[in-house]
Image 1 (cartoon, rainbow, N blue to C red):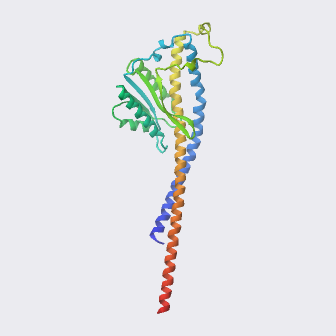
Image 2 (image 1 turned 180 degrees about the vertical axis):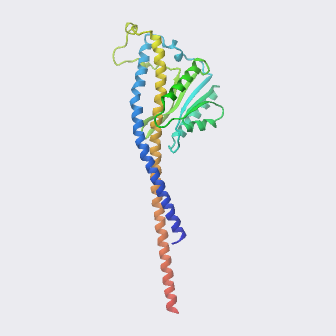
Image 3 (image 1 turned 60 degrees about the vertical axis):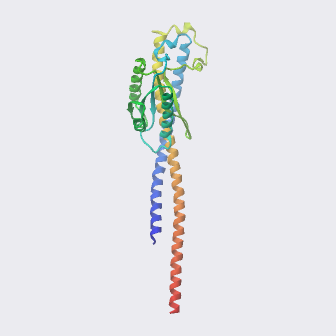
Length: 297
């Protein structure tokens, strides 16, 4: 057996082993994606209802009096960036980092300082090498089910800095899950919270001032509590959307890797068969040549 045939056999075996690994990772990612997708979709109504409540209360009280709703000139902006702890997820992390760099460059053009809080090991490593920004803190995703303690810790520190005028705006950069084949990176403003006119619409009739007056201790107190919960819900939802997007993109990346491995195996097998045929032809030519030489002798 020639060295070329032996080398091709080894390469085919190596690619087959790789395909088994990528296929297994594809199946695992698909299973995790389905669970993460359910969590992300099922929690969306909670965020929507909180937004609706803020919209209803704002019709009878000046919500902007609450500190979390006040807008002011932006001198320093805090970005909460969500990535994965692991790689092998296609362009998932690269897309987030591209959007992050775009926001940072936009801030530089506006003379706005940028602070960054990272969630996910990949984002932490990227921002550590990114110049011109303040890497305020770094957190891990903590697996497929991010800890609520992480959200509360980040939120408390963020609100404290905002109320202390250390930062003037907070955005969260994450990947929103749309479908198993589509995920969009978005940069949404978290603080100050801007009320959408649609938030004031209700399916039933709108509350009247008398109906709202029965709230205790006061509408303002309810608004403050609801605002904090809404911000917490938005950040939590961003984490869930990110996890679902990560598994979706990892599933697609591993599927593409498995398909590419299958194509490579087909090409190498064809090359192996050609090499074998060439070796057989060469051996037959040598046998025939030897036989003819023997006859002449």
